[in-house]
Each structure stands twice: as C-alpha cells, then as structure tokens.
Image 1 (tube, helix red, strand yellow):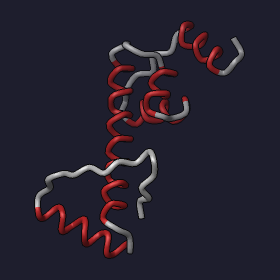
Image 2 (image 1 turned 90 degrees about the vertical axis):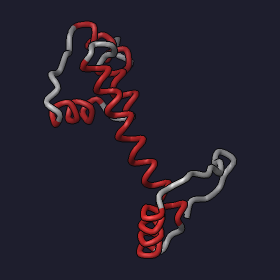
Image 3 (image 1 turned 180 degrees about the horizontal axis):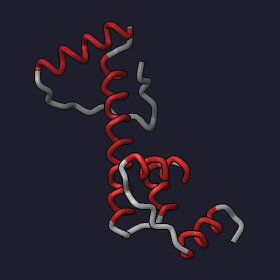
Image 4 (image 1 turned 60 degrees about the horizontal axis):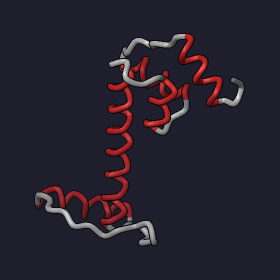
Length: 107
C-alpha cells in the first residue's frame, strides 16, 4: 500500500474503463490497493522517460556522460550499458574524463 506522507499528494485522473478494470485486477491479484499499482506504473514510466531524455540529450551532444547518468539516476556503468543496448555511440573525450574525475573527487 502506498503510504500518504508529507511528501505525497493526492491527484485524480481520468482513465479508460478497461484500464481501470485491469488496475483493479492487478491490485486484487497482488493483494495491494490500486494506488500502489498506479504508483508502480508511474515510477516505471518516469524512470524510462528520464532515461530516454538523458540519452537523447547525450546523443545530441548537449550533455556529458556524467550528466546523462545523473539525469537518469544511474551509475556511469549503467548509463554506458543503456547506450550500448540502444546502439548509441559513446562520445567520451578529455573534457568528460576531467568532469568524471571531479565528480569522483580526484580532479
């Protein structure tokens, strides 16, 4: 069950009836409330969206590898793996190395 905390907020949304039925079915099967199912779905979507955005900015040369990892909330190794899976060329130069060294506290 999703616990309502000081950082939580109630929202409402209009959803197609068939999607609501599916959410109810999943909630029943997993023995949790509908809010938990919706929270899990939104968490997965927002994680995928931020990764997609970070990779797009990196591909365009707008941000560095370190910044892409930060935006996507991933480690450098995880973002490199994501790049490889999507066949995006790693653009790693001396500037990136310097930034990474600073990030690691070695520069």
